[in-house]
Length: 72
Image (cartoon, rainbow, N blue to C red; front, side):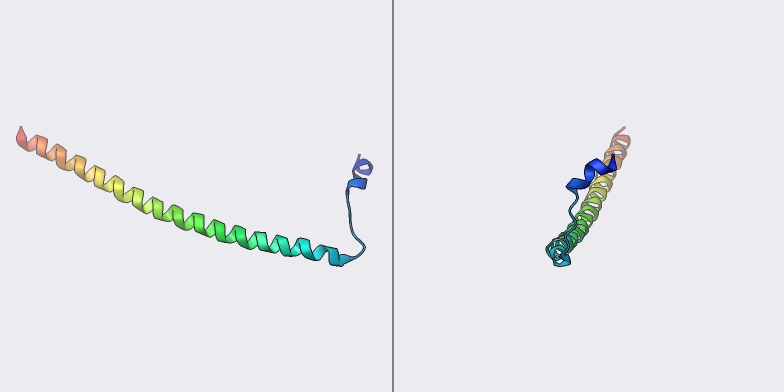
């Protein structure tokens, strides 16, 4: 089975043909790292905003419940 796939593999004799592939690989890896850091930072910011919103909603519910009990 491995012999059948061999014609599709290409290993150049001149190793300088690997340079463009290595450059593009490094470029995309750097781009990937920056994208990952940006997504992580944005996620933390959204998590903090969500936590703040949740705390505000719970506080408002508690206050409303206390007002109801005071009115009775």
